[in-house]
Image (cartoon, one colour):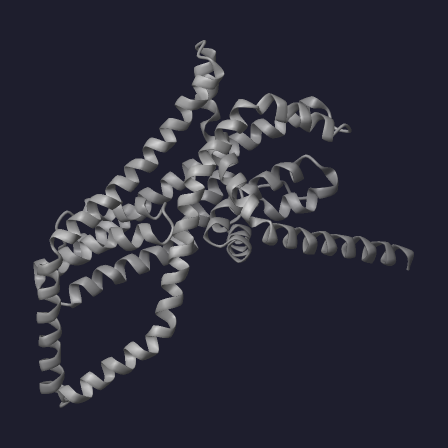
Length: 352
């Protein structure tokens, strides 16, 4: 009976810890999200920064050069977005004429095939617009808020990453003081493995982008869309920018499909391909590819992605993956957390 009471008390403390940790993560996401992204970038580019310092480059200069590589990549994505928007703006009148022609043809088809007169069609359109407005406006508002937050983080995160890299020895020394019961060697080992895990996470993401790009390209190729591989990989890479990236990058292949075939079914086919690939990516490709790199089983990875999405939105679906890897590193080195280590693992641990 005493053992049962002790076990019950232990599980109660665990549930209390999980509950309060969830509250802290949710209400503190305005702070934790940029810091987590900053750590992700800092750990990823740390090997480059360290290599430059070994070449006698001053630390401040090495940090600035390393961060500049990341900024150049992001600026390249933004440049592609702007180029796409300008390209679509030039084809705006032609696209409008094609859409009106297509809608007119669809109206005639409905009238001749199903005996649906124009008045009834117009009533359906008005009703659909009225019903969709209640969903469209909140969606636009949410998109604008998320995009504005993303742009604000674009300014803050490189600064935080640079400061983390520059003051890393101070942070590690403070960590030694905060964890006096642990040896310095074990703490340094966890830090090095954490950096390695974050780097493997980026490698897994690259694999995901390549697979998604190939699937997008093959789908567009089957539809006969010109420059299928260019558009397929462009849409894949643009998913790096939440919401706006995939929407804007998909507009060009959709427009090309309309201009090429003058039929509404080809643009709908392009949209259907992108939606199907995104679904497969979120539920199969990402958990398997990234989970294999981090040695975490796909079930736990999907659960952590779901929890991250609930607590931190789109950012949490990305950030909770490397955080799970860090949690596994800690559990692997603590006998009291051995069960958690096995739960998070990829099933290759020895049977006990």
